[in-house]
Image 1: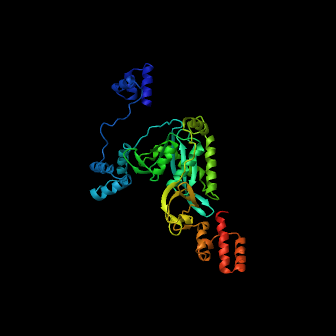
Image 2: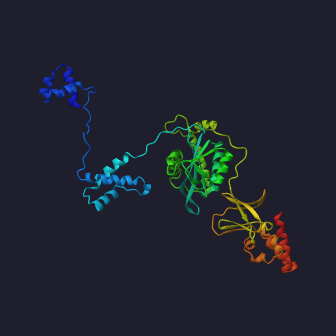
Image 3: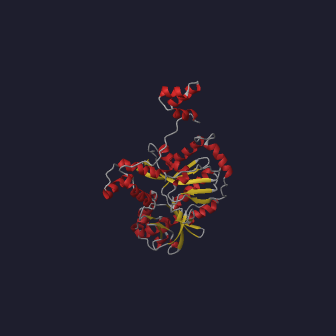
Length: 431
C-alpha cells in the first residue's frame, strides 16, 4: 500500500514513469498498472488453484464420504474431527497431524451451518412457554424446582411460577395463572413438543393435542402452535428468559421458606421487569406491554377449570385410586362410579355436579389419604373399629373429646359408652 502511495503521488507531482522506475526499481509496465488503478489500492491476493494438502490430499475423498454419511446419522452420533483423525490413522494408515484434519473439517462444516432471519412480531400476537429448572434452598434442604416461564415476543414481559411437577394439570394451572397475570390472551401460544401438551408429532407443524390442552385453547380462543423438533431457537425469547431465571434471579441460590414464598419472589421480579428497557428499544417493557394488551384478546368471563378428569370406581374400603395413592369418599359412594378431578394442589371426587370429597394432593407413592368423617357412618355397625383402625387412632381431635368418652364409659359402661361417643362423633358430619 505504501508503494502505491509513493508511486501515485510522485506521478501526480510530475515525475516521469521512467524516473520513478529507475528510482524504485520497478518496471515501467508495473508502474503504469499502479497509476491506472481505479481504486488506488493493490488487488487482494487471489489463489489460482485450490490449496494443496501434501499429506491429507489422498485422504480428502475418504473424509468427504464420512461427512456425507454423517448427514443422515443422528446429531449426537456424528464424527468429531478427533474421531475422524483416529479412523484415518487406524483404518487408512494416515501419518499426518490432527490439526490438518481439524482445519479441513471445520472449513467443510462452516458451509453447512444454519443461518437465521431476524423476526419481528406484532403486538399481542405471540406468547412463548417453556420450563426451566433451578435449585432452591428450602427448610428441608436444596431441591431442584421446575419453573414455568412465559414471555411475550413483542414486549418481552415475563411471567414465572414454580410448580411441583411438569404434568398436564401443572401446565394447565400455570397457563391460567399466566393469562390472569397479563389480563389478556395472545392470538398464538408456542411450545416445544412436550407430550403433556402434544401427544403426537405429525407432518410439519401438525400435532395431535392433549385433550385437556385442546380444551384450554378452546376456552381462551388462542391458536396452539409448536416449534419444529429440536428447533428450540424458534422461541428464542422464552429461551433467553430461562437463562435469565438461572443467572439473574437465582444466582446465588435463593433461600426460601417454601414454594409459596418462592412464587412471591418470582412475581416481584416479573413486576420489576416492566421498568427495564430492552437493548435496541426506546420504550420500557411495561410501555410496550400496553401496546401488547391493545392487540390481544380479552380474558373470558369465567375461569378455566385447570384440572385433569378421570373416571374411577370407589372400592369396598371407600377409596378411589389415583396413580398409586388412595383417597377416601363417603360410605354412600362405595362401589359407585365417580369422576376424579386432579389439580396441582388437591384432588376432588364428584358425581354429576355434586362434590363428594376434597383432599390435599399427595405426590408420594402408595399412600392413603383418608378423612375420618367419611367413615363415621360405618362405625354404627362396626364400633370396634374406633380403637382398631388407623383412620380414627390418628385423628387429631381436641382433648375435650377424650374427656367426653371417658365420662360416657364411666356412666354407661365401656360398650354402651363407646356407642354414645360414636353418636356424638357422627354429629361432626353436619356440624
